[in-house]
Length: 422
Image 1 (cartoon, rainbow, N blue to C red):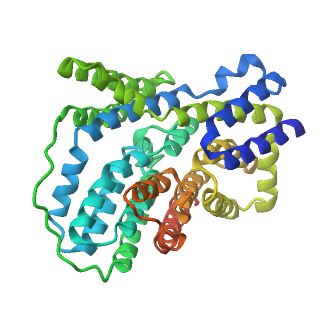
Image 2: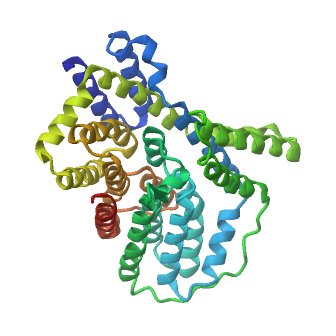
């Protein structure tokens, strides 16, 4: 177990020290777990959740087509037409980004909405930095709302066997969706207060023209089919992955028939984040290795010893530890690592794990909003600003990220405990 623990710690050190090489770090670590015999060769493929990997890949491909169709820009224009001033425009853009992010990857959401925010800021002659920071943190918040909203949600759904509708209503009680939405409503008031001085008028001179409505149909179809699949009993474990991949393939075939341009077919394939897929592939094997070696059970025992038989203390520990660690560590490997720990804690305490699962997802998803490097969406938004000639100071980000995060986390923390902790 000591060898597995040391190798796991070194893996995390590598993930932190080499952010551009995270996939390589995870894959090399996975290879070492196999070569050293920590994870038997026959159990390697069984430790990889291919349903999760297929869902991520398929959704990313469809999102690429969706972005190219310019539908997100049109939706943003429609929202701006109905806003009375800059303050409300920022809040509406952030809420719009959040709604999109509930069904689309957070980074993709920022890529969709940030160009609109830049254009609006330029037209109104305001600083785009706080606008795009607001969009990024709102995207991170809503990623936890649905099964397809973020990689962390997909990880939880795959590990805990949750379907699309379980995020809304599960075992006769409101799911995590409602905890997230409560946080979104309260954090919107935070944004209104932060932008209270921005009272200039907003005008949209020309609406964006959508080039193709089929990608929108595909994206909506993905959500609908995932909902319908949730009603199928004893379905294959890769059902959701097949749905996402199948609709992406339909989209690629459609693009080829429509354009006869092979480069347009390959663009969505190129836009898939293979680094994240390889990172997760490696981490699944690493986690399988430390589970096999008994590390997960040992960590769960430590958490249980700290909290004793007090479920509320265990829940509180999971939420706020997740907020802290996710402020500095990418939440994808963190959640992938902690899911089996949380399950082990629940088993030792003799309780259902769902309140701890939801607490983990709430803390890990929102904790990334505390710092500029805590989430990929934040890094993406800052990169867009940098390309446009704007530098983002830590103080610029923290001014929005800290009150936004604390408000949303506290709301989700209390709601989840009231509903699931009893």
